[in-house]
Length: 314
Ligand code: CP
Ligand code: NVA
Image 1 (cartoon, rainbow, N blue to C red):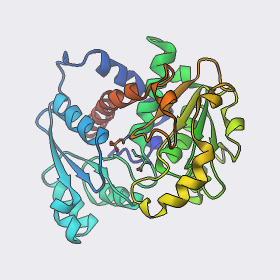
Image 2: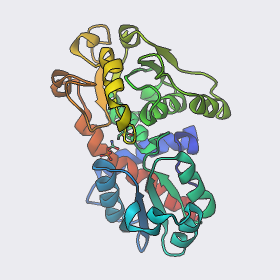
Image 3: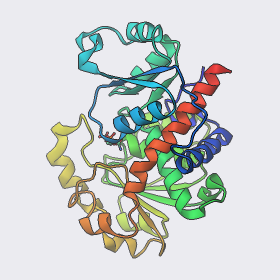
Image 4: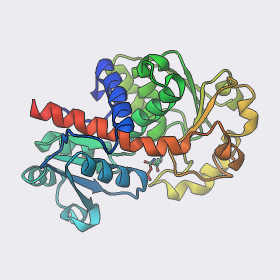
């Protein structure tokens, strides 16, 4: 059975299909006659806060004909120590799929292995693949309109700033390799992509295809996208002071755009903290497509849900 735990759980061809399907869902929202999740109930186990992911998944499941059931970790026995494996086995007896936001990536893998329904990774400490598919869809629709979305990504340069070892950075590295983009990351020493990501790249046959630098200007040169994320991810609050100090030189500012391509886009998965990882000026600029990204979570996740539901039915 197919799960979506990491970017490369879809082949290149399937991934291109997800982008096209996301565009179809976007253009035909409210007109759908097919309801691929009709009669299904999907559980949403969340161990961390969420605005975009939670709401866009609940709406997506509902609009595809299914019933979303939100399960905050602390409201179910998982929060009192019931094992991940037993949770997977029990919930698989009721549900048709699981959307999971948690800390350890191994938890989503265990849910997938021990359960018998498709599992979608809605963010772990390691990866945020729903965000990545949404992001590349959002950039591609800007670049090609009705043209070939996946094709338009090839050879584009993305510059990622700040915490280059977090879930969104890791997803961008994996996703850039999947979609044949070039990924440059700029951040302080000690926040370069870590060994777990390097092993995954090796396993997937990509080797070390990313560039890490401590020079923010070098990363921005001729970039098509300047991307950043929060400097303090959920679960890292104890390191806040140190991170804010170390990452201050990596804030995305208008000056960085002077060396990027003239039509370069600004992207951020949100939530954003203006005055920290990015200036208010950049957030408000015409280059910024942050709210298109937020909207497109809905359309991209419909495409992912539909692909997994169809795979299960076949
Ligand atoms: N970008 C993102 O995943 O946002 P939420 O944490 O609000 O879901
Ligand atoms: N890196 C951030 C992403 C939030 C959507 C976090 O994990 O908190």
